[in-house]
Image (tube, rainbow, N blue to C red):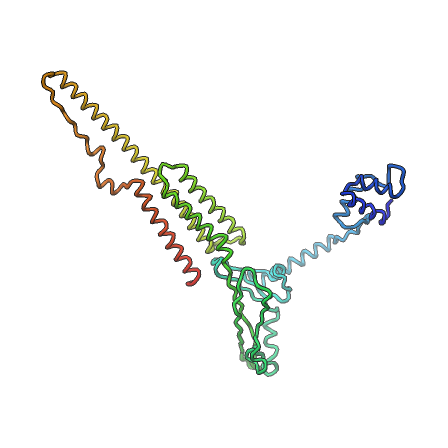
Length: 388
C-alpha cells in the first residue's frame, strides 16, 4: 500500500516523463533502488490513479459522500417549488427568485421584474424592471416629513446644492447601450397622519445599433443590390441569372437564422425581422421576374420560328407555281409574286403594347425594384428612428 507521499512522488514522475506510466514506474524503481521489475503498482493502476487525481484533485483512497438523504432531498425540492410558485402567484408574469438568480441581485431586494419587449429591436429598448425592497410600501410611510425630510442633492441647501444627485463612473460603460442622463423625481403623499415623501429615478438606455448595422443591415442590403445585377444580364444566360438569384436568397435566409439565434424565443416580429423579410421578398421578386422574362423570351422565339417556317413554305409554293407556268407556256412566262402575310410575321402594334419583349421588361425592372426598395428603406428608417 502506497502512502500519500509516495503517491505524490509518482504523480510528479508521471508528469515529468510526458505522462507515461511505464517511464514513471521505471524512474521510481530506479530511485528507490528496487531491483525487481514489479511493484509497487502496475502501469494500469497508475493510470487509474492519475485519472482519479485529475478528476477529483485528491490522492485519498476514499472520499466521504456528501449526498443528502432521500427525505432531505425531497424536502428541499418541495420547499424550492413552493417558494417559486408563491413568487409567481404573488408577482404575476415572472418569478422574483428566477430574476434574482439570473441578474445576481439578492432575492430580498427584487420586488418585481417585467418581461422584455423586442418589437422594435434593435432600435428602442423596452426593458422595464423595478427593483424595490419587498417592504417598500410600508417603509415609505414609516417616517413622515416631520421626522425625515427627503431631498435630492440638487434641491438641498448649500453647500450640497451643486452636487449631482446621481453620479456614474466613467470607467464602466454598457456594451450594447448608451446610458442617457437620469431623471430624478420627488413625490409627496398627504395623509391624515402627515405628509410622506419618497424619491425615485428613471434610467433610460438607448441601444447601440452600430453592431446591427455592420452584421445585418449592410450585408442584407448588399445582397439585395447583388440580386439586381441579373436585370443587366442576357435573358439567354439561364445558369448565371438562376445561380445569382438562388445564392442571394440562401444568403439572406442564413442571415435571418443568425439574427434570430441571438434573441430569446418570441412569437412576434421585430423591426429587424421586417427588414430581412422585405429583403427576402425583393430577391424572390427578382427570381419571379426572370421567370416571366424567360417565358416571354421563349414565346417570342417560338413565334419567330413558326413565322420563319411559314415564310419558307410560302417561298417554296411560289417557286413551284413559277416552275408550273414555265412548263405550260415556254414562249411566254409570267412571273408571279406572293406577298408575305403581315399577320404572321409582323405582329400588330396593339399586341406589342400588351406583350412587351424581354428587353423592355428587364428595363422596367431596373428602375422599379430600386425605386420600391428605396421608398421602403426611407419609410422604415424614418419610422423606427424618429417617429416611433
